[in-house]
Length: 418
Ligand code: HAM
Figure (cartoon, rainbow, N blue to C red):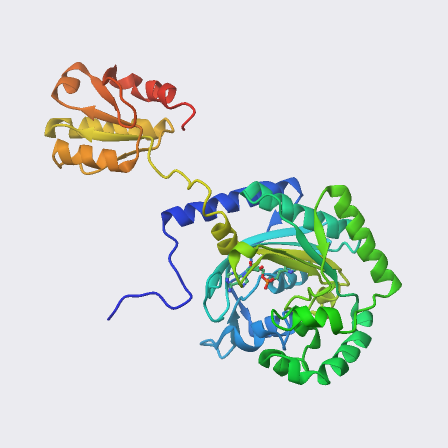
């Protein structure tokens, strides 16, 4: 058997995993500031949940779901996105009754059987946020502002948000037909995928990489009803107050069916063709259409894999131990093992290799580890009850300290490195 991972699935080695963890930590801090609480929902749900919420005619549901029949004969799917599970939990767990704001965040892996390419994986991580039960533009502005603050906190300053309004179901009903009539007359100019999908979802042609640019100039525009227009104007005003740069992009339509009114994305040309770092929008009708109360909502999800790619030139997180313990003789092994425990108990990241190896080989490991100090115990130190501290990165004398004082002395040396 050859041992290899599946196409589109990958290992995150410690440096990558540390970058992901740093982004997640930044996200948790920002979510706490905005009153969002974590919600963990299952990875596998009934397939019908995604068909009904993400949308029957979306690429995600049509072509990209990992769906199968389980042992009990149920049609299930591995989640391609987080919003449907959150909405299901909101309804099933009666979260509208919980008495406070329904603001939830999630951090988890999603699965889509897309054609893998740079920035597009079949298993990828999303950090998402959903604000359910607030219809006002203040919720839109707050959600988008939080997204931008999170990107800044994670190390990506200066993001501009692409913004559009898709109007309500009423605004779109008339527009859909007008646009479809227009597109039917232009099929010879449309790319192959657009030709295939205009009958099912004509709006998707507007954000096609090939056809979007000419359609932006020539296709009929969506006219918002007075309520939707006022909502969109107010959202932009509030974003200005919050100091969030944005750019109204009438071509932004998003690829999921549940959106109403505000939609947005943050993109980066540094990512190539898969340029969306985050996407989201309002979904005012979804909760009700899934059998819940009338609960307008807004949310977004960011692709952690893509954000990590954008941050790859930032200094990598330091994974090196602070100190490395070396047993210089066989008799010193137990005392060295004791020292490791004492250092860790004092909150100092300490490592060792194999105490039974030669001094030379342990010192080689100490150098490779990236630790700032090696702590050696040999015959003399054993007799004197001391530990030798040897700087590894900078030139400096080896010093001896009493065994019991070693953790405290190291803490003062290492400040502020630990
Ligand atoms: P989405 O636009 O499908 O929206 O995905 C959000 C983000 O997930 C994308 O902007 C991208 O960064 C990342 N992403 C998507 N597919 C892949 C992939 N194959 N490989 C790597 N990254 C990927 C949603 O999922 C909605 N649930 C967002 C939302 C929440 N809307 C309202 N609430």
